[in-house]
Structures are given as C-alpha cells and as structure tokens.
Image (cartoon, rainbow, N blue to C red; front, side, top):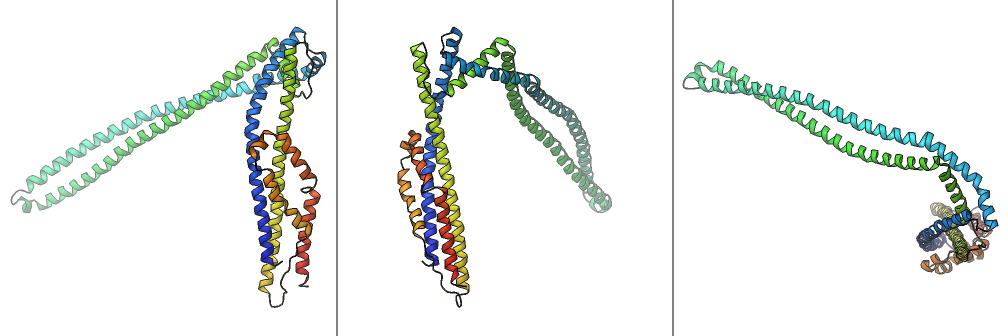
Amino acid sequence: MKGDQTLRYLKTQGEAIDALVRELDEVQVAFNAQFDDFKARHDARLDELTEQVFAALRAGSLDPGLRAAIEALLPAERACLEERRQKVRDTYLPQRRQAADEILQQAQAEITALRDLNPRLDREEEELKAEKATLEARLAALNDEIRIKSRGLGVVTSFVSITRADRERQRTIGKLEALADSLLKVRKEWDEERRTVEQHQAELQERWQLESIAVARLQAELDQLDDDQAREDLALRRAIRQVLDDLKEPVPAPDPALAAALEDMTVLNVQTDAYHEGLASVGGLIGLLGGIKGGLEAIARSVEGLVREQEMHSAYLKPLDFQLSARVEAFHKQWATLKGQFSDEAAIGAHPAAFSAAVRPLLEEPLSQASIEAMFGDLGKMIERASATWR
C-alpha cells in the first residue's frame, strides 16, 4: 500500500471513530437527561421513606436489623453535626456577618465621599461662574470702547488704543472659552462620579442582600443545631437516609405499606447504580476511543514524515510500501458495527444496565488493552518494515 493510500486509510478510521464517538455523546446526553429526572424521583421517594422509617423507629415498629444498621451510623452522624455546629458558630456565621458589614460600610463610605465631593464641585462651579461674569462684563466694556473709538475719523486717531483694546478683547474671549471648558469639566465630573457611585451602590446592595440571606440561613441552621433534641432528630434522619440510600435487598417490616415502600426503594437504588455504571461506561468508552484516535494520528504523522523524506530523496530512496496486517484491518472493521449498535440513544438511555452489559464484553476482547496494544504494535512494525528497504 502506497503512502498516500495508508494515510487515507488512517484518516478514514479516525473519521469512523469520530462518528462512533458522536453517537456515544448522544447516548451520554440521553443518560444524563433521564438520570436527572430519575434522580429527582429517587430523592423525593427517599425523603418520604426517611420520614416513614423515622416515625416507625420512634414507635418501636421497625425491623431489628434495619434498626441496628441505623443505630450503627448514629455516633458518626452526631459527631458530624457537632462539628458542623462549631464551624457554623465559630467560623461561617461570623465570616458572613463580617462580609455583610464590610459591604455596608463600603456603601456608606462611597455615599459620604460623594456628598463631600458635591460641595467642593459646587464651590468650584460658583467661583468659575463669578469669574465668567467678570470676564463677560470686561468683554462688553471692551466692545463698547472699540465701537465708540471706531466712529468716523476715530479709527485713525485712536488706532493704537483700538488695537490694544482688541488684543485684550481676544484674550478675554480666550479666557471665557477656557472657563466654559472648566465649567463643563466640573459638571461632567459630578455626573460621572454620581453615575459610577449609583451603579456601584446597586452592585453592593445585591451583594449585601446575598450575604444577608446567607447569614439568615446559617443562623437558622445554628438555631436548629443548638437545640439538642432537634440535633438528635437530624442525626437520626441522616442515618436513616444513608441506610435507605444503600439498600440493595428488600427489608421486612411489620407494616405492609412500609415493607412495600422499602422494596420500592431497593429497586430505585439498583436503578441508580445502573445509571452510575452506564454513565461511567459511556464516559470510559469515549475516552478510550479518543486515545485510539490520538494514536492513529501519531502513526499518520510518522507515515507522513517518511513519505516526505522519500519524495525529497526519491533518486536514491525506494518507494515506500506499507503492509497492513490482518489484525489491524480486523480491529478497525468494528467501528461501523458499533456505531449501529449504539445509534438508538433514546432506547439506550432508558436501559443503562443493558448498555453496560453490552460495553463490558467489548472492553474484555475487541477493545481490551491487549488488543489495542497489539494493533498499534502491528502498525509500528508496518512502519519499520516500510523503511527497512532504505538501509
């Protein structure tokens, strides 16, 4: 096989892997979407059952084995809640309160600075206005002087004084223009500062509200944790929830309704594990395929380098002949089959356990580490054999 044919073959296999990965991406999206809905139902059922078991435990009507499993977790949950209580009281709540106070102080400091700025700018504006009025009066006087002296022969006899007055007039006009710029600058400074402060005040207000909400929530949590009975009930509920969330086999219960709910929880937990396994399987398979494609691209670069070298020195380097092994060709024939196998993402997304069961044998044989290493080993030997004729 010529070099360009080999490169086309490798490119085709990379494209086939990309097509398969796109199908698996759709499967992953389907898994995530359906798992989100399923997890919401699972957690809602878990919350309901936690309260049922809590009531049954308080009433003394719980299976001894289930009671023992819950009580075994209680010491750890009590310690966890006590640690949380100390952190909320000594660290989290003071930090949030301080953050809220600092935001409030910053907002007040900005308002004070703006108020201090206003009188200064007002004073500057009034001083500029007074100077402007003086200059305008002087300009009017100069205009009158020039007009009077310019009548009749006065323009000749008073030429020197008229010229002097006109020069002063031009200087006065220049000063008035500069004053106008200064007035505009003062007013612009005030407007810009006011807008900046108003915008930042809105941002600070939002941050302060968020911190205040966090303070309120932490205070409510601390109030609950400071209550010995409430803290004990919470520890018990957490222990119950953990045990129920780990149930994989039905647990007997004197109450038929509770027994049915426990059995339903077991089924939901098994389905949760199936989704986790399915998500791990599809993610692992996508990563594996990405690694294979990356390896093919590295092989292609090596082939391309040899082809360029042969073309540059074709006068004394023999044409390259790349021979694909039967194992390499057989390995890469599986992409189209797998793409078809995983094309119905909606159906696969609803049956994660079936997907994991389908992926498992793939990883044990055609896509096993040994198979992948053997395939790349053959490609490496192909390159060595193709360039061996140059020696």
